[in-house]
Image (tube, rainbow over all chains, first blue to last red; front, side, top):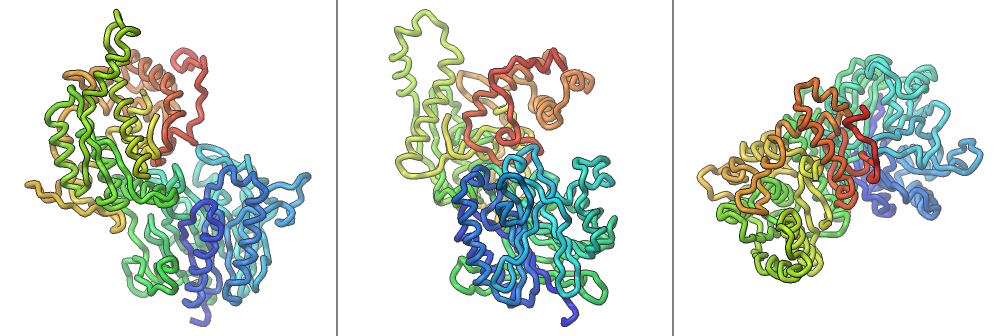
Length: 450
Length: 151
């Protein structure tokens, strides 16, 4: 299609701090995007370093290494492809006037072997899990990139979350989207790292549709995917037309590359001639598994149909990525026969495969017969292995040790808590000995009230 | 404190139950890469979580006959109180106006504040709600702010 600007959505799963690995992943996606005819590829926010890099950002060596990797990437990329990469840069590199050298959260345009433009993020979220005022200074001008005669507004995550019409209030004085419209933008891209929260996918999509309709502005929304510490990013990237119609939605909770065709005659994204499911098409590996790039060239992927299904997918991805990114292949947990450890065992089995999950039964004299039976039945259903370590002898040992010191006191909460501490020590010892990751099983209600 | 990852630290108990029931109903709508292959030989081929685990009264089994509801309200009541306190930052007066027993509200607030030091030592959890303990919840430990009397 000659009169189309093909835009590639790189829904990446970066590992925080793995600058070289993240650079290679961006390169593989870019090579694939180029092979599919894309003129522009957009990554998620801070894709080169992974989001959130937290206090790695205060280390000057980290910021220098990011710049170095970007220069290497620029030279490696197909020369005809324009790539917007999320990266932390110094205010000097970003040509942003600031009294002392500061950091800027940016979208860097890599084109023709160089870092040709640097677009700073304008709104810096500093609430809930976000801390961006701690690290960054904001950009002060609307960011517009011209490509094939199309004026493309470049925004980063929070920049589009300040629509008083949608939220009923403004959180910031500046509305970067309004300023882009005033600057003549006719298409917008957004590089995001928007963490998963139950129900947020639908809310986010409604907000993006509202933005597209309000400003008659087709837009491409690229979200990070994967677990990084306590946060899970769900991906679920979008291409939306000015009518609010969703033309492309990527499958959530999985990395991949999607293509959206912006028709230069109609100034809209091309809707698919016939409805398709919108899954990742299997793609041929280029250079080993690392280079596998799932591709979606058509369709609108379905959202997970229930809140339970969504939360489940997020927890499975969270465990899988935490283990993988920390370098663990096997996990263990205590199996009490209760519902909390049952759910955690199931999540772990889905995340890492049942052969990589060890359930440890640690019955005490107070354990009911059914607890052991229930834990064994669960392990059998999941296909995970179990070990049984009774704790009665250790409890007696503690009683003997404390006999004199605790004499004349009532046995109570202290002795009850010792059972949990004994179990914790045994689990940590196994984790230590075999290099497994210990998963704990407390739920939020329990953790709230101690 | 022990452990490397607190998998369900942001999953309220009532959601733990609904996730387990969803699993046993065949994981409807689950993306393939998150699906759990079942090897169940039980009567119900979909069963992942044994039925008895779902139906018995929850208990830490630290003393004979102990159940969680000896010391806590029913979990649907507790989770509504916690949802209002933690997720919605409501004042006790709002909880009481919503029909919660003032003594129960008072007790849960005390327990919530008193457990702050334990949460600070806990393994990281995976955020799935709008306010998770951890980076999104930065409460002081040595604090005299009394939620119940001051708000």
